[in-house]
Image (cartoon, rainbow, N blue to C red; front, side):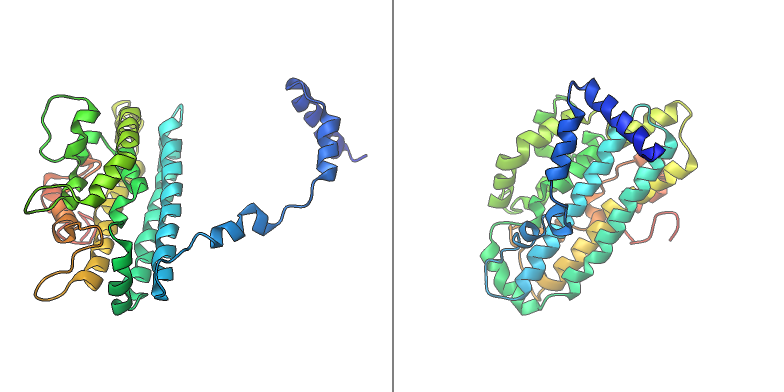
Length: 310
């Protein structure tokens, strides 16, 4: 028998013995098992069955499929953030490499918005969107999880009191809630009420869990101990810019494409006031304020270029 194969069998025997298992039984199972196929591995039939338009308009398939693809990228982004949050010890090289992945994902997400901006007929969208009320992309809980895992919770708040410090008492001051509040009455839209009822408790738990392991906290720990690098700081700046300026500007372009109409803009499907909510210069959300100059922060979101490099 090949020496390499013999060595691997010995390693397998040791592995199963350590677990109190019989290797021969597992080898018998391997003999009986069928070969793995690509379509079974990625559950292709299930995946392709998940696109279920609510109308007969052809371009609704584009709309629902695009949003599902976006949510899969969000899943990968959260996967990378979790690796950074959990790494022990965390090194600048590991942190920088994972931030490179995050920036690539958001680059792809931004570029993919052309599918939404240019890939649907305007009149079809205005028709099928009415069958989707009150659902909205605003209700993407994964994007809210990305924000919470990226920075200190207070960096996501507007007009929050200094006290109390409990996340549950600060939840209603999250900046994005203003985007789903009726401007005239200051009442929550049904879109926001649905979202809070379904996701509020888990977001509060996540904010508590990430209090001392969000991306900003992990960077500050390295920096305080002299372990940060210019490359890591640059990657974090790019991430801040891509998430809080470029991604949101792409979303804004899509809204303008389909919802801007003279003399009055069309309301988004969930009743969100997208005109005041989406522009990053109005949101002014910054994950890593210590990495930007006062001038850069003052001009935040006023242009699409990376601050300091326009």
